[in-house]
Image 1 (cartoon, rainbow, N blue to C red):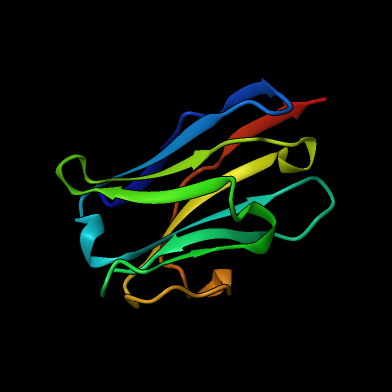
Image 2 (cartoon, rainbow, N blue to C red; image 1 turned 60 degrees about the horizontal axis):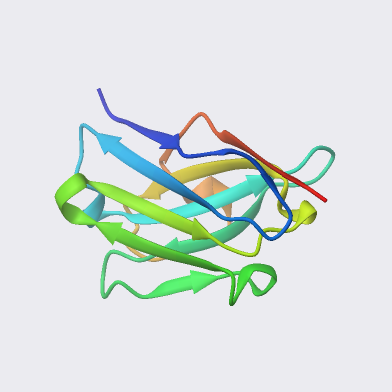
Length: 124
């Protein structure tokens, strides 16, 4: 069964850190571009970060630059999103998505596989 599963979410205070993991089963993440999206209540889903499968280049949205990093762990078939200096505005459901298109895209419709989402809550 092909699927991706997120883990590592939870509740933290402003300024805290969390590390999200996206783990795949049924396929190798190395051959897919992997993105993290998030969706807050009443807002559209937005891309947070992505890592391509071509040269490993990464993308970070302006609102997380300097605070979040994305990385692959090929041995564990996992992509991680390290989130530091969290703010209340980061509160959302975070989704992992994979596309066989190799490159990163901001349009959620281009992604083939999605996790179920995981809650991140940052309190002030």
